[in-house]
Image (tube, rainbow, N blue to C red; front, side, top):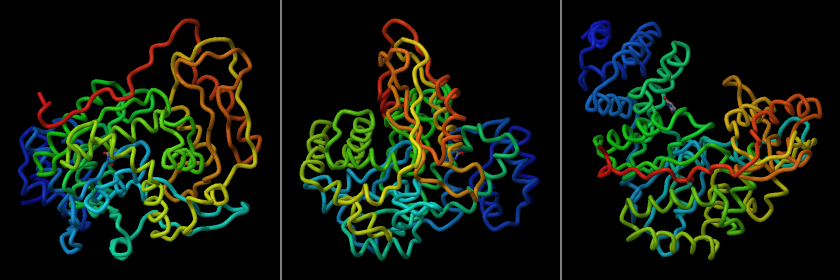
Length: 441
Ligand code: URA
């Protein structure tokens, strides 16, 4: 079948079947389909949408467009679990107390989403621990054999998804629910998972701008993941303020270490991590209920298993063996720390979380273009929280920057990201909802 016939069908509002979608995804992966056709396909899907079964077929086609990993040769004693989120990642579940030998918690996010501990930034003193944030499957398997923890290599459906996403980006077709679901889930399901927990963010820093859109994405992910044969649940979690009180690479690793050391058991970061990990244990049948899951997870902090597992993960991927013991030695710090003061008295009623994220990118902590280097030293810390009462002149946050000009250039914009007024603020719940297959409409 000609690719233009498939595009024509979708353009005219008809449904595509698995065979057609396989042709499209394979053609995208092997380069036989051109960018113009990819753009036309994406626009046809954007304008006409997809039925539930069609979205599942598209997701399976993305999943199968590259290598789908299998782990049966590793003689696993427990299920292969994963979670995916735009938020923080940590190896809590892999060391879940008595489950340690049974539960396998692979997590590509842990390995790739952050530059990790750390490549040296030009001009910065310190050590380059050589941590590999994007290990090959071979590296991963070697490491697996040395370690009781199982982590995923790069998802294998990336060639098709990467190209499709690149074209969507420049053809105004990113905001299509079936394309988003197939993109996110196709990559995840190519990792050969037994089950998956997704963290879908809601609020001013979230990918989906409204609660309704976030809920629709969550429902589509649960329905599609389950229909594609991987039990999938979603936690809708709040992003109306940063999850941690800091943002930036080294700063966030330091915050994550506080949780892993058991020093932080109250923050939003801790509570979301706990909720996601708990859902993973319940969903896979490794914990009876929330209370059982929480008890096991608390044990991983009390007995040091979570921290020890993270240390092994870092070392296994090329980082220093003593990273968790000497993190402050390895984590780079910015030369300039600049305080942004509250312009008036008031209670923090709203935070433009996206603006804070963009500020980190501007400081050099994120990429504007694919090839940009990341400066792990920079970011924001001591970020005021929703509901916090401030007097004029008290700090809203601290900016960690490469130089004073960079910090001062952002001050006014960062101050504008906080809305202060009198009276009590409404604080949204941290976990808006948990969606499982049985909750679907
Ligand atoms: N993240 C992805 O990986 N794909 C999308 O389409 C949107 C968000």
